[in-house]
Length: 142
Image (cartoon, rainbow, N blue to C red; front, top):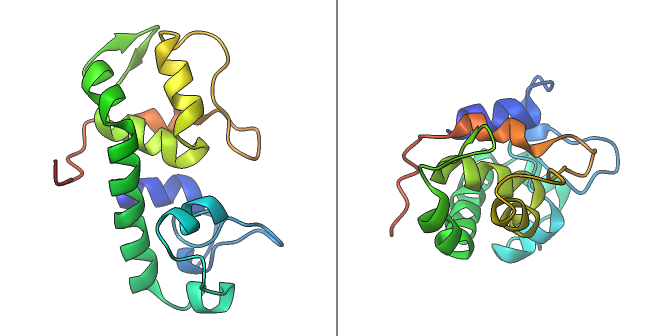
């Protein structure tokens, strides 16, 4: 799942751990933004420290997935395994999509039955592309 997620986030970089558009707040292999790094208590790291530490980035992503899961648990329980408006909704797809846009837009979209305004990332790209990361076991402590 993480490998495929990073493929969506940082595939255009020779070293995905060093992925960052000029001046962007989204850093590294998984493009963790400022608010995600704050949520996992890793906002103290500089870009130089972040890009040169793959172990840090892997640990950060593990913490971030756990935080997203805790926040999204009621939505996962309600929507996992459903087929809504042409979309197969799964736990790992919900988490992947929320990683991309943040959980609040995804919650609203799910509550509308996957109709209406589709969540978009900071670049304006449709976040439903992350739903292809469904049906993975994220090995979350539940």
